[in-house]
Image (cartoon, rainbow, N blue to C red; front, side, top):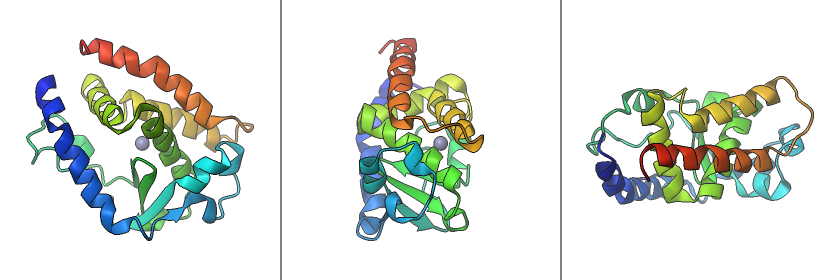
Amino acid sequence: MDLAVLQKKLPEMMTWIEQTLAPHRATARPVADLGFPRLAHYYSAPLLGGSRVILVDECPVPPLSRMGLDGFEDFENLHAAGITYGPYFFVRRECAHDESLHFHELVHVVQWAHLGPQKFVMAYALGHLAAGSYRQNPLEVMAYDFQDQFDRRALAFDAGGRVRTECDRVVPELFKHFGL
Ligand SMILES: [Zn+2]
């Protein structure tokens, strides 16, 4: 995968995200309204109020191979339980009550907000390519590690703050790795 190709496709990806979210914006529900008891021990009230969930049968994934981007096949074929685009995330209907999954997607909400949309998408794509798989993508490793702490019922911690600190550590390294 040529880096220049990836950068050139960024606007197309952003447009796809915009069009995918558009029909759901009005009905997406704030996480704060979903009645999860533990999320507030890890995320701030503004974050939980501003992050919105869209329930779907299948989570929409950008058609990267159709856009001419290779190397993301496992990501495209994930049948993910959840996927995040900015402060919005899609959740498969049968996972609507899965608090741990919502915790995981909120890590991505914080990553998006902290990095900004363009930089998030670039970092996520480069992370995937560097690691060679969805699960080893540093931005996913971060989400799964924090989710694991949540699942093991770790004492309350500032997940938002810790995600931002981790992004500042991991993302510049990643960009440097690709000469950016
Ligand atoms: Zn994830």
